[in-house]
Image (cartoon, rainbow, N blue to C red; front, top):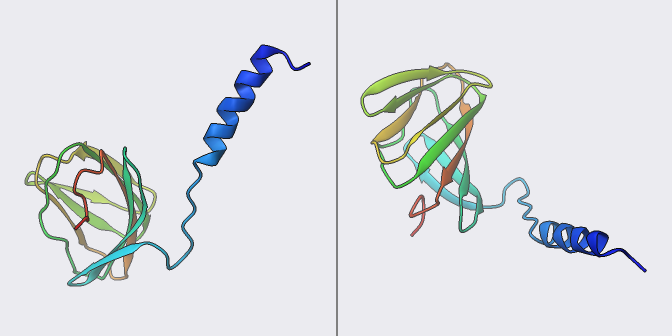
Length: 128
């Protein structure tokens, strides 16, 4: 007989592992702009995860939405404008800001930059 505590743990782990989402390279909703490409890797009720590739000198449009936004630079050098304040981010740098303030990203490097953005809640971020 399995003790009650072990059954409870088994149920929690089963629920946890049953909610796994995997996106392979090349999968996900894609939104392209002038010099940048957003790929939605995961969208749930609580968050959206976006992988962005942005060409040198290119920038996103100003955008605002509810919640918070976390950005992590995987490659390159970015200039992040949040409410008129400018922040420079490089490889492995990250930032968190409220999404209600207009914000945009520009690649200030000489090569394509790649960064990951997590928005919570997902609201209408990159949705139709």
